[in-house]
Image (cartoon, rainbow, N blue to C red; front, side, top):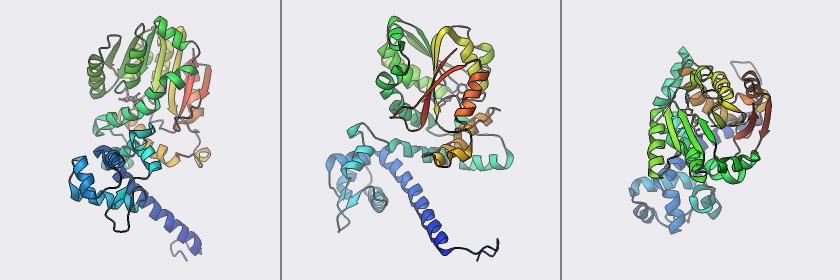
Length: 361
Ligand SMILES: C[S@@+](CC[C@H](N)C(=O)[O-])C[C@H]1O[C@@H](n2cnc3c(N)ncnc32)[C@H](O)[C@@H]1O
């Protein structure tokens, strides 16, 4: 019996939820250890040297043995690493190595870093729950670095074979030479790759934050690219200050929903596109209705990232805070209000998080 709600409790329901709760706690803690395994190179070294003791692993990875042994305890009891019956020789199973190291090109371990990045601002988010407001980008340690790894996996590696083919003739136009803008470019990984692939075209990246823009500029110099420039620019007023009919192709990779004013930015994009231009928008795939997202394979992840970051950085700029799960219906409404009526939505197999909207003026 639940004394507070005077409802007869079913012991089976209690047990099932108790088990679920334990799973939640174990998985959340394990995710932090996996992030450390990724950052310290422990997964890579364990795959490389095969069955090994904590001392062998620590030596090869150039890390402190005591910490490595404790890490092995977490990832072994969590079913990520296996050990022998003496508890002293550890192995990374092949299927786990395929997804947690760079060996097979499908390393997803980097994603676990987001847990600590978001956890770092918990105090400030709790304060926002009480008082409203938001948390600025500058408060998030390593956000742009981790985001750029995600961009590399989902966008850069898929540009030529999966993303460009969504827009017939775009590759030919890029080869001939066109003007391209990427809004909310972050570290500019996509633009740097496009600039390398298409030397006849000119590429421009705008982003609010100085730190990723500085990284992108330095990287362009390092790679000897003279056809790409990066600018620190607040796009909140882009509806008023976008250069008219200046670009043939505008891209936004995971960068519309967390803007202060997605409506202003989309109107500016419409204004900045040439009449035969195209807008490509990669944004989170969801419904605008929570009820439709109840069985979404990434539901809790999307709403948590929103609450801890995307909605919150937008609100910190006095923005709309539409949230990560603003969803397809709201996306289409915003596009329509910005003057876009020709919208094709695609899903790509390699990217389980996003939709790709190909939009014409
Ligand atoms: C989720 S990140 C995506 C970055 C990049 N496109 C990528 O895929 O790695 C969103 C980006 O939008 C930028 N941003 C947020 N608000 C902005 C604003 N008001 N003006 C310009 N850029 C903004 C952030 O600095 C951040 O780099």
